Amino acid sequence: MISVRQAQERGRANFGWLDSKHTFSFGSYYDPQHMGFSALRVINDDKVIPGAGFETHGHRDMEIISYVLSGTIAHKDSEGNVQTLPAGEFQLMSAGKGIYHSEFNASKADDLRFLQIWIEPNSLGGQPGYQQKDFGREPGLTPIATPDGREGTLHIKQDATLSQLILASGESLNLAVQAGRKVYVHLVSGTLSLDSTKLQPGDGAKVVDQTVLELRSSGSETVTALVFDLP
Image (cartoon, rainbow, N blue to C red; front, side, top):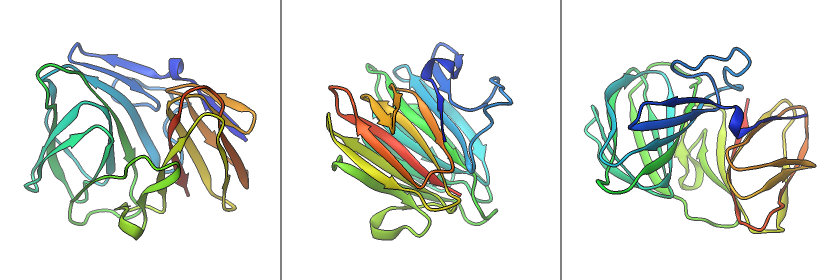
């Protein structure tokens, strides 16, 4: 079964310096029908004006993934990590027993847009961690974060896998889904069909009780999407 969360249905928070669209309940946006999906708790589509950003704040017991769509993030945290995260790169911050960090638009001229993703961990506490990597844009499904950090992927503290999907116009692939697993698809760009269900940019889809899912680029543009395999 496929259930679509359309882009225009998402919650929204606009503070001037930040314009954010929330797939799931977050901050002042509350919707009891959209509190997350399995271990996936947050997908925020954040646009930050030049030079602005999130002042130092704390997290604990959360796996926090940032995926930059345009611009560059300037990151600094209490573990001593001072990094820049350009467009196309993924960052995974494991909050563990507690971490403080700030995130700013590194540019004084251009907007920053990125996806902020929270996944609940399957173990609490522990030492905070920081990982960052560019996985390129290979066609098909590219694993980004895995439970064991295999083959150079980011190591996430959850029985979950995040993959990047790239499909040129007209291309398709079949995704095998293990029994009892759930899948969430967030479309970044292009037009993507899941079996006979069509997604537009910003749409998300919950997939349950399926063993095979056809992913097809059904528009003229290349598809970029995030695919979550969840417990």
